[in-house]
Image (cartoon, rainbow, N blue to C red; front, top):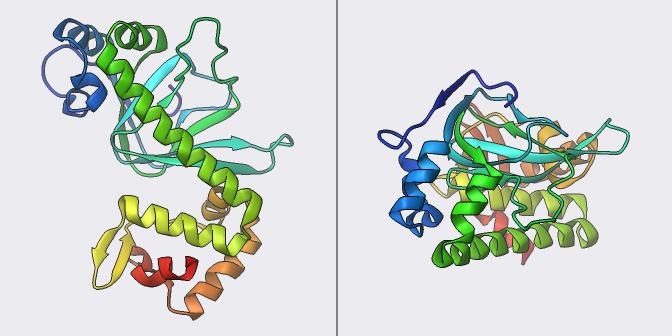
Length: 240
């Protein structure tokens, strides 16, 4: 763990409802559920804390219980970073390579909390053993990873074929649908987000994102307020 302000062991009783309510956990036998709960730890992070840095703290599977975090990577020069995905409550991340002999993530990604977060972690070997021996859990995990793959393929397609403005719109629409609060024809992302963070999310320079945001603001599609980032629901219509 890197940057967490609290860490505690999590036993087989009390707390951790996010684990017990997860579809993969529910697909496990009672014996495997108990084994997983005994091995899990609960971690807390403040906004901006690294959950794990590039090349460090691997061999763990994380379940985000509360808050949001981003999974990202750095450019070869180390001067720029790109957000590969934003994970929210209920998402799994970390070392998800379970096949024997298959190299785990080579350590070029990092996880950083976007808000105050609570996460649970367990070692990859323990998680893999629990899931491998349970057919229903394995199928549920496969379905989850397939959705993640589609999500990643969609982002790669956007990087290849869409300009900065369209990538930004797609990211804002996606983010708004996932975490936004509906309010009078708008979606409010209730957190401060910098132009640099948005640039990392769409794989562009901060200057290009600033220009695209100004264009959207002139059209009344995106505004920044004390409530956070306010997105007009009609923003998605610009993609048609």
